[in-house]
Image (cartoon, rainbow, N blue to C red; front, side, top):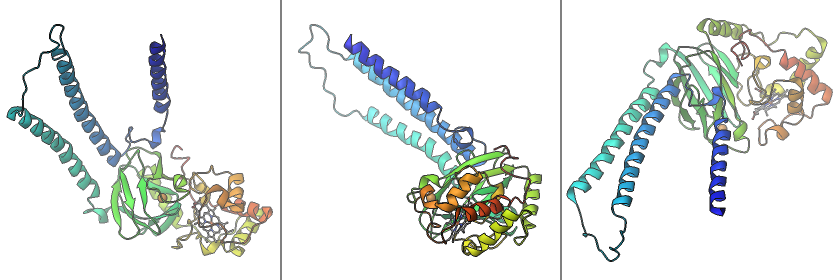
Length: 350
Ligand code: HEC
Ligand SMILES: [Cu+2]
């Protein structure tokens, strides 16, 4: 009875774990539902290797079961010693050659896909984005379009977009599971990769290389929009006037406070390559604050009052004067009004 209960318990645990884990992951944060070129080619490799591994597993189980049944000790033969075989050329050859063939079946498509995804011979004919990974945020520089932004990266669907990636500090890794593979972002050398999204949408990106205490909060989003909308977004971003005065009095105070509290030493609005902090040109259009907080005014005020409590180890903490609640409030009002475009994560289906 006890043994039966034990087995039942482990079966129950396993089943509930499977059900719970199956609920993990979001549709726009999974490599198993590919929505772009790199993710699709990874998925094909995942399927291929699963088939090969299942094949090996089934053969091994069959041989194992045959051996168990045929060669078990039989009644009346307790002292029987089977024929002792040492070395069998045919068998040795078979179990050396088959694994080599299997490894080749895995290796050839994998190496081909790796070279394909790293191919940048036609990069100059496409959109190029220079990406800088920083503890704990991402900077995106559309060099040809003269647009700087951060956290949310906009791309047109159905087009190859070439990424040139460098880190300003430690090693990070750029990963958008639904549309691309993973690429390390190193401080010394530029790594390149291209991405292509098939469908419009907001795809979640993660830093996939441990980079410090707030590594797990180093999120970003890829906003894939139609080519027409992308053109519109580029135009909107290019025509931002960084000096524009906000409409209402609170936001005007906020703009003044932003200028007085050394925020501009690290944060640019408009196309200027300040890279110590995120470029805030389209801050009010962002899907998140600091990469992961919902874009509410309360969250923004909390961030401005005490960023350390939200993202330990970030490089803003302690580098600007203490803000009063009122100052933080007016700055928040000002920053949330920086909404240059109608093309936003929301319009793309966030
Ligand atoms: C020493 C440089 C520095 C100064 C000065 C500074 N910041 Fe920051 N700020 C940063 C960095 C770095 C980040 C990114 C932190 C992270 O996500 O790890 C950041 C993040 C932010 C964010 C979130 C940006 C986003 O894209 O979601 C806002 C908003 C912000 N800062 C506002 C301000 C304001 C307002 C001031 C002035 C009161 C200020 N910062 C002063 C460096 C600075
Ligand atoms: Cu990182």
